[in-house]
Image 1: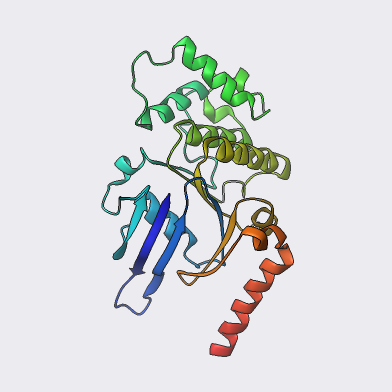
Image 2: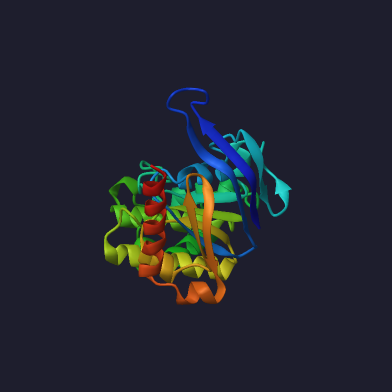
Length: 259
């Protein structure tokens, strides 16, 4: 379970370029719920993910994971309970280390793992099995340095690393935006399988309206740091790309009327 309570963050407070990033934002996801977050640039999507991960300190409000208040928990401690996959395939992996070594590092971030025995035969077999699900041949490249992988392979590895520790919360920060369509589809299908199999509470930020329609249990729209729209259940099952784009148009019309 993930809950954001009255989260507020203001940048450059009191200055001419003051920016309200999160404006008393409230959001709640049940355990295993997959929420897809949309919104225009500057809507607060990245600020929300940064606040959840601990990279952004709130001015006020709370972040709760499975009912525990983690608002003041440092990033490195919070990382034992949540995982994040970034848009940039270069983030989230160590370029000079092998595929297997990267996966071991991800395991060590989990509260369920220890350093004992390192890259033993059992772990190598487990990593090979997990990577084979991607269909990218990475299971045969465990000893390859990550810097030699393509961007799509590296991003796919980041996803497998993120879900390997079975985090309480999974944050996906436009994690398919930099990929070609075929690889993006592979990563999205792997994402759905992982979320469903492990019952991961997941927030995925995307600008891809088709992904917002096709994936997740709910669509969440942010605007100026606030929750402006939440679609779930039967409404989510029937929503179309045109419907979602229409909500952006309504927001734009509102801004024009206010100017």
